[in-house]
Length: 127
Image (cartoon, rainbow, N blue to C red):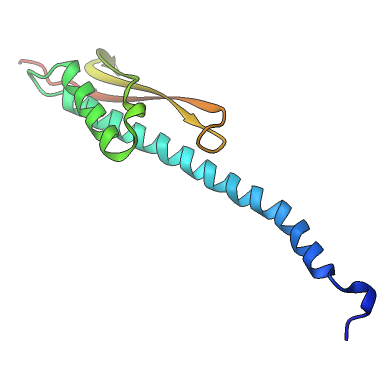
């Protein structure tokens, strides 16, 4: 049987443990969200570069494909910083899509982390 002077100690212990665990769990969830956004942007940039690579396609085709994929998977605001251009990939003609986005690092309204991802693909050229 607990002593009378220890009554209510479990509530204090619970509050002290929760003060440590809740921020830890929320921090892990936020890191997961940032990684999800980064991986989605990277995948969309790679797919956009592949869309710009076929013979007759333009960099704008790749940028449009990238924007469509980002808008489908994430919010519209992540699709604002998409650019595409011709480049060389290992000395071979290629296409490049660059996506720049700011992802909130602390909740929905906290400071943001700036992400820049690139997608490359070898371009088809006329023989």
